[in-house]
Amino acid sequence: IPAYNPLLSEYSPGKFLLQEIVKWCSDHGIQVFDLTIGNEPYKYQWADQEMELFEYLEGMTTKGKLLRAAIISLRKTKDYMKRILR
Image (cartoon, one colour):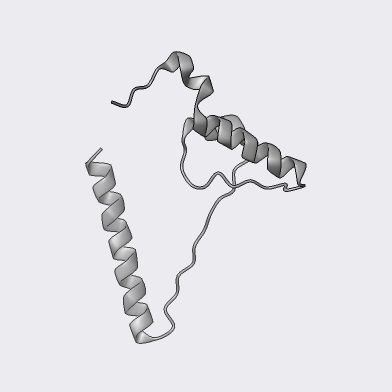
């Protein structure tokens, strides 16, 4: 049965792996390490800045414009469902 003990949280395999990956990147001159999307608390402990992500979607043909409208509609529906189901 999986269990979590807060007293042992500093020994988390995930935390250790992240620490080693960041150390490796630093040792090899990698200056940007992307923690991916999300606002999990640990990311604020590791990051010294945030990068905004943007996406631009434009339809050039009639089919493309219809597809763009459908995608935007689906995204709005998904966002709405997330808000009301919290």
